Length: 413
Length: 66
Ligand code: HEM
Ligand code: SF4
Image 1 (tube, rainbow over the protein chains, first blue to last red):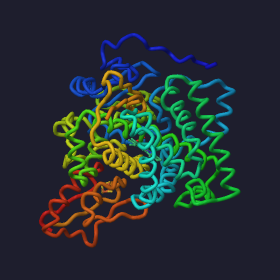
Image 2: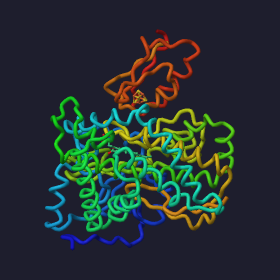
Image 3: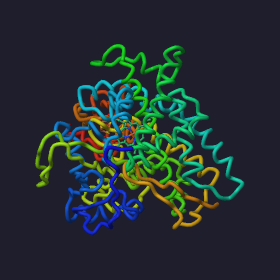
Image 4: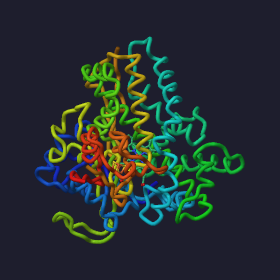
């Protein structure tokens, strides 16, 4: 039951500048030509579909909009608006969700301290503590399929990694990784266009995390939940209120799984079709660092949203209060004005100021973790499986919307 | 040559540190600072320029003549 049923938008798009559809199957699979067309014709496109939104596609516009936090608020970062859940469900959710998912869903001043709490736990140095166990995890995943000569690089590999790494950081049982991967997909993927699925998934995540928080209050450990329960930062309440801790844990689970899995999956999809790149990475192992940045640029998975706080004109577009803006970081990273040969993957690209992790005050707090996971996942795969290819390029499936990446990607070796 | 980070603009992408660890250091939250007084030895000039062009926040500036 919903107050407003999710609208179906099945009519094909005729004009992408005025009626784009981020869930169009062809677009999800191959959005790049559309972005090229929009950048040329209408750099801030508009649609009434899925609750309505504006979509900038140039690097410059993305930077400017991200910087203007007064007009472009982060109070609701979801890219689709398909109505609110029933009052009953809403009341339940509000109990849990009273503070949203800070810092991603907040503006300063709350954003400032809720981000400051997290950053020290996601520095390059802190994240390195999880590198060895991530390597072991990757090896054990490969052990399961190496003798079969085939695997689904998305399902059997990419998808299995981030959920377990974040579980380890939060101190939650890794055996349940499969379960919360499905909840996160329910929230960010299937649930984006279906409010019942989305709120159901949110409730499951909150109830689970709430148990974990209560458990950690009784028995603190060396994990992120225990840390947040006693963490301090300038400007932050002391102690951090429990709903806030819960909201942040929700974010870490949701932001850390689909995103990183998608970028590892896209990297595998690329490598499966580019044996020369595999060979280069094997022959020149130090290339992995720029290669990860380049794969992030070319196949950026994440689009976030902003909400307009008051009527304002931007680039000639008459934006109204509460309009949604899709922060199309992936399109910015293919902007030919900013990147030479943007559609080419150049593993050792020297000038690469990509914004796959966003830009400005909401720059992904987990970026060092995501980079470490991508690097380790690619390295461990290539050590054991230096040569591989897509089993059937036509059989690869993609998810899109908030997070774009392959969901089925069978490879043979 | 001397590099300078505008700490108001730096959002901690850590790209500068990764391309030129000799010239940048990070605090516990990942915000970058110049090593020492920011003076760039001749052999690191190219790396300094790379740090500038890879910073998505345009937070690093170079004074070629200092
Ligand atoms: C390749 C993988 C990832 C990509 C591409 C990515 C992308 C992004 C983007 C674009 C934003 C900016 C949101 C905005 O401007 O509204 C963001 C924010 C955030 N991400 Fe990630 N992310 C990834 C992985 C992770 C991981 C592994 C974690 C941690 C577990 C994480 C935690 C966060 C947090 C906490 C924020 C909010 C920061 C803030 O609002 O200040 N992300 N991410
Ligand atoms: S690359 Fe730029 S934003 Fe990132 S840490 Fe360095 S100076 Fe700061």
